[in-house]
Length: 570
Ligand code: FAD
Image: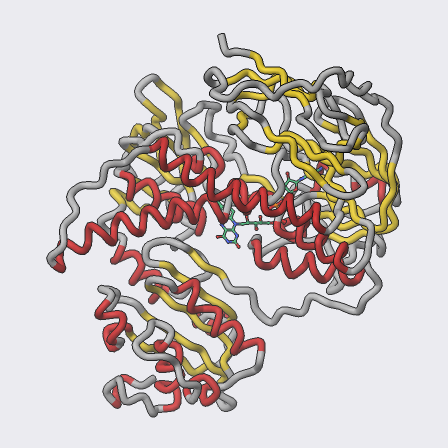
């Protein structure tokens, strides 16, 4: 039986009866030693109250707005192991402050629902513009999908995968490290630490900006009111002048898959439950291929099944062909134009049948990465008069919904479902809500698959140009002509730029190769600034770099690249 620790407020110096302004954890949650349990605020400072033990929170005994003093009993924690520090001394004779259970409604200028990249960016920007902001988040930590179960944990694992495989490739250059030894527990700890550092940072920044964070699930109850169901069962009423809805999206669950712990979505896969012998990834988009990369680097044999005729739909085929060749070793089967027709859980694994000729196989783990759907249906938006269609909320360029004082941003308002889009929309919504002139008018939004190698693309693709009947000039710079790519063992890469015929204004670009995601930013900037081939080609790029390939592709478009044979230019 784990030992139950009573956690009390430590010595607060001269302060007593200070209000709890934030509860950072919820009952049942695993907590680390020194993890913040709650925050209190005096008239001079804000203080974290950490847990002196690691374990699981049994119960939180105080709520937001309750007042506490040194010695107040605030929580009970079932410790993982006996605490190696003595319990926090209870100053005598300080009696525990009475716990206030009455909670009143509060109001604000801007209510933000959801603390993902869209919501926290909107909340912070609105606070920076002088608004009184309340940010409501149903999860224990801020950061939404991106920080907790999306962009950041996946990139932590992809970094490990890329370095592991790069180290193995060095054998061809005369340096061998031997087979990797995987310590899953350490890897999980590294991933969790990366996430925690960022989510804790957000909590601190919310505090510094005096954004009131409420942990609970929000629903609109009227055009200017909402109710938040707190984790302790209490409901809190809020009144707002304007609201920004940033409730994000959730993974699609495929109806033909049974309930079984061996069938996971991206959130489950990021928990690294095991290294399966055989993994089936359903979905050949960015998320599916990123997770396939991680698990294959850890040693799983991976099949990918994609319903559409191509992997990474939306990317030009010449780049995907390079990616596929480079990843041939990684997958047992890459099945495009194929669907899962049935799946049955049996003791040996998940037996999956596929459409067409593909052979039925039993897998140790199945990852469904077949898309995400917006969370608009469960927000009570109808009570506020906001229209919702299939979970999506429509907005104008100011991010206003059909109800002008209610804004929506991020995954909730449609594709592309990307964090950087959500952040920019959050800033626009906050600025408009604070009475400023602003609009979301990005010319392009870059996309990146952080696989090995990475693929990044922005603006018009060759395929889309053809489909639309648009005449474009295409310039390619193969990395086989880049000194840096050859030195890095990345001579298979490709940088491609698309220019408007005649004006030679850049309208699109795509890159496959290491760090493609970092390199594509230059192309996005060039498109936003209306740059042409001369602007990019005449900009002196540092040598020898992979970024140089963007400049060299533009030179090729101008027919003045001396690093390619004359015939290879365009
Ligand atoms: P979210 O991040 O989904 O946040 C919404 C928040 O609202 C959540 O925290 C949710 O708990 C909260 N919420 C919902 N309803 C309520 C309610 N009623 N009351 C209170 N709170 C509520 N994007 C990239 O740009 N780059 C990447 O590399 C990348 N990698 C990804 C990897 C994976 C595995 C996944 C799943 C996604 C990835 N994404 C990536 C997509 C990215 O995570 C999302 O586009 C982004 O998080 C959307 O931000 P958001 O603010 O709209 O919503």
